[in-house]
Length: 192
Image (cartoon, rainbow, N blue to C red; front, side, top):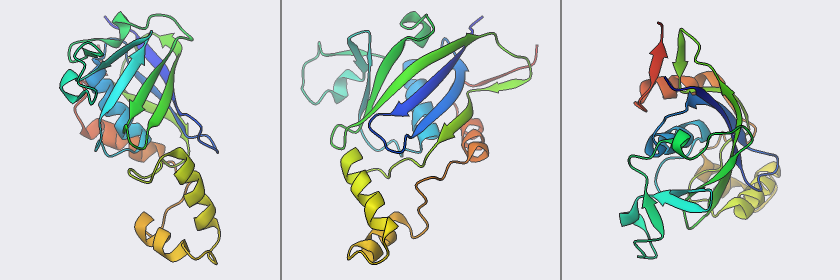
């Protein structure tokens, strides 16, 4: 039986830091890990993505914008524990090759499976995910500066675009875990 991986997913260059800590089955398929990352971070799964693990790129070859069939390894049947096996190993998850949201993922702990626990599970985190299509991490920093100042010329327009109630510090663990339970990621509830 698989172990449980405790992963910390950090959005690179975010300030203040935006991150999530999750528990997943070690033998999760990479496409399912992608969906979980989208859910826990708050992305909308509207763009291409790929993993860079041990110097090799994993994703969907038909989505390779460089049209080099050898650049991307098809990840559809690749399990995470076939690539990452030791605590403190890191790998990269890139989402949206235009805005270029790069995430560093750290395998913090390898844990035994606990009975009566639903996996995947988010156990901690910090910060609201930037909105998709906002222009990348540097533009997001500019947006945060704009919305701090109601006197800024762009404030009204930006708040309308963000939905009027955008809080960059918002993080709701219960909400994330409800979303994880509603979606199918090869999830399990172990009760043996």
